[in-house]
Amino acid sequence: MSMTINDLAGPLGAEVCRAMSQAKVFLDSHNDEQLLGRIGETVAGMASARTITKAVMQKSYGGGTPAETDDLLAGRGLFYVTEQGKLFLDCTAGHYQMSWGYDHPVLTQVIHDGLAAGIVPDNHSNIPQWPVKRLAQKLVEAANPDLPELRQGDFARVMESKTRLNTVLLGTATGSVACEAALKIMLMHHERTRRPGPPIFIVLDGNYHGTGFFSQYLRGMWGSYLRNLEVVAVQPNDGDELERVIARHQDRIAGFWAEPIMMNREAIRVQPEYLQLARKLVRRVGALLAIDEIQTGFWTSDLFMYKQCDIVPDIVVVGKGMSAGLHPLSGIIYRRELDVLAQYDAISTNGNAALAALVALANIELLQRHGSEIDGTQEYYYQRLGDLAAEFPDRIAAVHGHRALTGLKFRQVDDALAFHKKCVESGLWLRVHAYHAGHSTILCKFALCLERAVVDEFIRRLRRLLQTGK
Ligand SMILES: Cc1ncc(COP(=O)(O)O)c(C=O)c1O
Image 1 (cartoon, protein in one colour):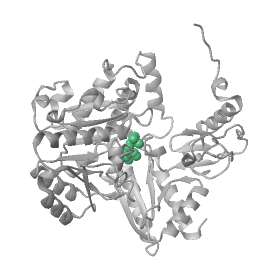
Image 2 (image 1 turned 45 degrees about the horizontal axis):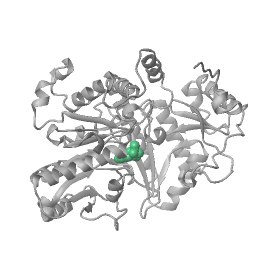
Image 3 (image 1 turned 180 degrees about the vertical axis):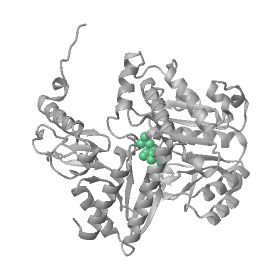
């Protein structure tokens, strides 16, 4: 069949295409310094695409109404232009997954080169193309940096080990499915190893491990429907409470879950000492420790944040930034002993995707090559945010998080909400956590292409908004 589409106007509509390419040309023809000076401006001459509507979309995504939209039209790096032509600085790396921002020149080129070289976007999971297998190796390498032979392609010793993270499931596309897979492994391990009575999962209060039924149950949903599974939520960083809970439930505990930074709970950092204690106690009762790195993974030069805590989890869950937001790809890294799931216990059609795996490999290479620069800029940002908070002690209670994943904790919820509104009006795309009692935090997660000049301008703008409200 001979088929042609000469341009994108066919599938997308001519007016939208024109607006989109004008926005992209604007972004591409201005350097970051020029864009920084124009954040919040409505760019003159940008054709507004009147045909864009999301009325048919779900209400919770802003749909259900014929109202004019002002969503993302085109992006480059940390910047994007909206459908109404306004220039924004993206302080959340998209939905926390665009780890190198939009249209990163290297990753975009890798995608084109990969397709040209015969890498398929996706195919049947039973015949994974080489990038998927290579990515699995890379993840084992990253989890075992002290084994130099892995870098030479010799995996014999790590495969024999009973204690090392040496097994990778990449057949899941979204983080939610990966979390469910890890939960099922915990359940099966619990069943296999003993124990009368319903298994207990210990979680951190305010956790977010995705939208699966099981993982939502971990955060208090669907309680009246699930039976024979108990969840005990503990407060992050309260070691005494954890000791008490583990001592009380002992071998009924199937596992303990933690995210190194709780992006669903005001970016609270779970302290390394707390995770070390959890590691020790969980092992003592024969349960499993899962570290959910879906938010934190691939945002530091050592790839996983658990590495900074001096622990080895039983299961590490990865997703989001792994493939730099190109295409969802998630996975779990675990010990061979825990390789108990059958293929259809944990699979997504779009898991094991070769092109996404290629991007993940390029992402890892970029991260490792530019590691010290990235770490330095992130430390600089964290320091500057702390200094800013110290200038407004009557309004800002604390800076949460670590490096690029931060929460600016306000003393008053209303103040946080009003400040968030002002930020967005002024062209800073960031988020606020104020929808649970006691939450009053501005959240940011800057992409890895963050530069010091952007940090300086961002802090300057926050200071001005704090001082003058505009
Ligand atoms: C810590 C954590 N776990 C799990 C998930 C679920 O991932 P996904 O949205 O890809 O299903 C998320 C998503 O935000 C997350 O932040």
